[in-house]
Image (tube, rainbow, N blue to C red; front, side, top):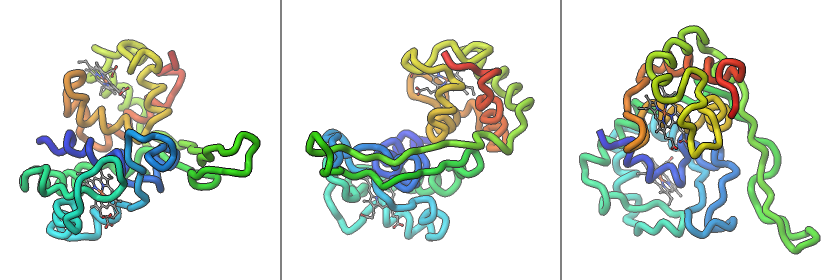
Length: 224
Ligand code: HEC
Ligand code: HEC
C-alpha cells in the first residue's frame, strides 16, 4: 500500500495528525512566515472531514478541489487528480478513514498564546510570534509493561534496550523523539521510514498506546 508514502505530500499542509495549524503544526512556519520552501499549514480539520463525509465526497475533495493547480509554494489545495492515479487517491481515502490513529488516544496537546503571526511593534522592526505547544499524557491510557514487551520484541534489535542506539540524526533517543514529537513517532513506527525502518512493526492501536506509555517513561527510555 502506497498511501502512507502518498500522505507524506499531505502532511506539509495538514500535519501528521490531520489537524494542521489547529494541532501539532500550530507553530510550523510556511511561505507567509519566513520559510519560502514550504506551504503554509492549513487550519482545515481533515480528521473531522474524513469521519463525516462519504468515501466519494472525500475522494472528490482530494482528487479535484475546483481544479486548482498544484503549486507547493502557495497554500491552496492541489488538484491531485493530475498527479495521483485514481487508485492512489482511493488508497488515501481508505488510509485517512481507517489507518489514522486518533491523537487523543496517544497524547494531549495544548496550544497556548496567540496564533503564529508577525509582530511589528518590537525594537528590531518585527518578530515572529508562535504559540507554545505542550504535550502531556503521552501514552497515559497505556500499559507500560506490555509496551516494554512490544519494544523488546520489535525495536530493541536496532535501537538498543534503552532506545539510545541508531537515534534520529544522532540528536535524540527514541524515547526523547517520541516525547518531543508524539504526533510523528506513531506514524513512522506504524508505516516505517523508506529505506530505514520497515512498515508494520506495530499495527495494533492498543499496542501503540502501550508502546507510548513505555516510551514516555524517561527512566526506561532516557534522553541521549
Ligand atoms: C499546499 C497545501 C496542501 C496540501 C499539500 C494538501 N492540502 Fe488538503 N487542503 C489544503 C487547504 C488550504 C484546504 C482548505 C480547503 C481548500 O482549499 O480546498 C484543504 C482541504 C482538504 C480537505 C477538505 C477538508 C474539508 O473539511 O473540506 C481534504 C479532505 C484534504 N485537504 C485532503 C488532503 C490530502 C489527502 C492531501 C494529500 C494528498 C492534501 N489534502 C494535501 C491544503 C493542502
Ligand atoms: C531494522 C532496524 C530498525 C527497527 C527494527 C526499528 N527501527 Fe526505528 N528507525 C531505524 C532507522 C534506521 C531509523 C532512521 C533514523 C534516522 O532517520 O536517522 C529509525 C527511525 C525511528 C524513529 C523516528 C526518528 C526520526 O528522526 O524520524 C522512531 C520514533 C523509531 N525509529 C522508533 C522505532 C520503534 C518504536 C521501533 C519498534 C516498534 C523501531 N523504531 C524499530 C531502524 C529501526
